[in-house]
Amino acid sequence: MIVRQFLQWVRSAPPGERAEATSALARAYLHSDLSFDDLAAAEGAMIMMLDDPSPLVRRAMSDVFASSQKAPPVVVNALAADQIDVALPILSRSPLLLEDDLVDLIATGQPETQTAIAGRVLLSAPLAAAISEVGSAEACLTLLENPDAEIALFSINRIVERFGHLSAIRENLVARDDLPMTTRQALLSKLSQTLAGFVTSRNWLGPEHAEYAAREALEKATLALAAETPYEEVPELMRHLRQSGQLTGGMILRALLSGNVVLFEEALAELSDVPLDRVTSYIHDRNISGFHALYSKAGLPDIAYPAFREAITAMRDGVLIGEQGGVARLKRRMVERVLARCSHERGPEMASLLALLRRFAVEAAREEARMFCDDLVATDYMVADSRMVA
Image (cartoon, rainbow, N blue to C red; front, top):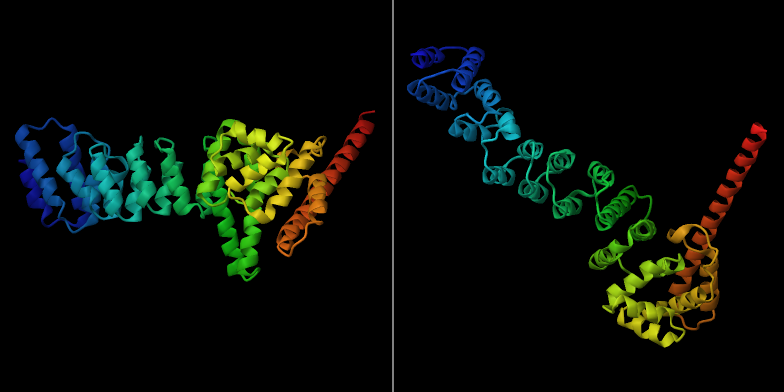
């Protein structure tokens, strides 16, 4: 009886009043003690209201049914496919939407649809994977900000691959304390590419110069990251660098000249496919011929071999003993010794290696000077503080 009156009245009522009446009918469907016939009539009326030209009416049903397990599934699914203003509550909260339905909506929906789904409570790993694969940047950021989302590492890596150039995505991921070093390094790589593109677009540097500067900055940042990497994660980091084309002779030489012997050994093991214990024995064996064979097997450039040979000799002679600054910084004594020894090598092909070593020498000297000045200032502060206390 009530439903019949509703259907007669709704034909001529204005949109605002139709929305209020439809909301009341939806609440009655969920919470009133209606008979079976009345429930069926109410559901039929609401299915009819899905065709109402006013979004206010359809939104009214969406608001009422969004969080309910008892809502009519036909109505809920129709509302989920409606325009975003109508669908938003259903997409965000409805427990009646099946995972397959949500995956389909992610694949075919607009960015607003994807974003609404990304913010759902207890979002499953398959839904997170779908969003990471085809979702918009905004949807992926919402996913990362969703504390209830179950996000697999491969989904995070996919987001880095697609949107790691966006600062909001990077900042969210960098703030996480559960990311492996491979993912953090991938973020560094994205940042490097972004910066290179930025300075080139502003005509601050030419493309080649910008690319070189970005690559050098990335190598330094990667070594700093590697210095903080737990020992058991280093092989995986080397694998990532190799697969992404970043495990170059220049980076490995920088690691050795910084005193990061662990990274140097793991890099050679990764490139040569020789077990780590054998790599270690070749590096520390007084007979350099074993290392030369290992170096060739790793596929490192022949032109750089003299620098590696001299660096290993310097390391065996104890040049690194007493050096400060950790293994993320080029060691000045080491670099200058290798540069001096390589300067005696003959051949025009040595020019590029010597140029690289000279740049390393300048960088090492500047880093050492910064450390010296920082220590000097810190000492002055300590003296001043002790005088005030006295």
